[in-house]
Amino acid sequence: MLRIGNIDIKVPIFQGGMAIGVSMSDLAASVSNAGGVGVIAGTGLSKSDLLDEIKKTKEKIIGAGKVLGVNIMFATTNFMDLVDASIEGGVQFIIFGAGFSRDIFQYVKDKGVQAIPIVSSLKLAKISEKLGAPAVIVEGGNAGGHLGSEFDSWDIVPEVSHNISIPVIGAGGVMTPEDGERMLSLGAQGIQMGSRFVASKECGVSEIFKEMYVNAKEGDIVKIMSSAGLPANAITSPYVEKVLHETTDLPSHCTNCLKKCTRKFCVNEKLRKAHDGDFNGGIFFAGRDAWKIKEILSVNEIMNTFKKIFK
Image (cartoon, rainbow, N blue to C red):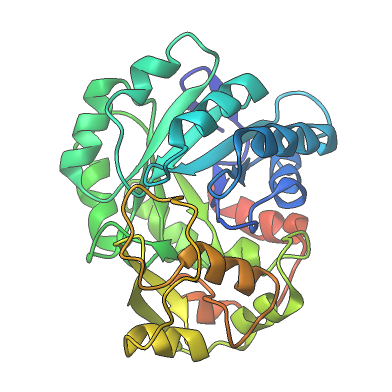
C-alpha cells in the first residue's frame, strides 16, 4: 500500500501514459481494477475526446477505491485544456512530463486532483516538492518514448529518493519483477511501467506493434531525435532508419499540436501509424530494455507477477 496525498494505492504500480492511443480505456481500467494506477494518455486528444475517454474508463472500473490518472505532455499546445478535462472528469492524478509546469500545482489545489510531475533530475524533484507535488515519477533515459535525461533511471532514482521526503515512483527499465525489485532497492516506493503494458492483451495497439516488442532483440531499440525536440527510444524500423539518417519526408500538413516542433516529420502521425500496425511508416516507441519482454500477457497476469515484489 502506498499513500500519495489523500489517495491509497493498493499495488504501487503506475501504468505509463503512452500516447498516441496506446494507453486508453481498456488498458487503464484493467490496471485500476487490479489495484494499480491506470493512466489514460491525454496527449493527442481534444478536451471533449479526453472527457469521453475518462467516462468510458470509469464505466469499466469495478468497485470503490480504484485509482485513475491522465498523462499529458506539457509540450502540447492544448495542455491546459486537457488539465481542465482531467479535473472535470474526476480523475485522481494528472501526470505530466516532456516539460515542466510550475503553475499546475497551485492550479489544481482544492480541485480534487493531484499533479504528479515526471522528472529526470534531483534539482527538478526538489523544485516539485517545494511547489507542492505529492510525489514524483523519476524517469531515466532508458525509458520509452520522449526522454529528459541521458542518465538511466538506475542512476537517477537513488539520488532523488535519498534527498526528498515525498514518494518516488521509479520509471524506466522495469520489464521484469527482478527489475522492479531493483528499483525498490534504490529507494523508490513504487514503479511505473509502460513497455510491459504495451505487450498486454488489453492494450489497444495492433498485434504487429505488440509482436515487435516480443520479437525485439537486445540492441534493437535505438535513440532518435523526435520532431518534438526531445530524444526518444524506439524499436528499429524502416521509418526509424529514415529518422536516424535524416531522410524523413516533411509533413504535408500541420495541426500545431506541439509548442515546439522541428517539423522534420510529424511524430504524432508516425505514432498513429505505429498504433495501426504500419511497419514501414510507423515509429514504435519502446523502453531500451523492452527486448526482455517475451510474451503478451493479460493485465491481471502482469500485475500478479509484479505484486509479489511489494510483500
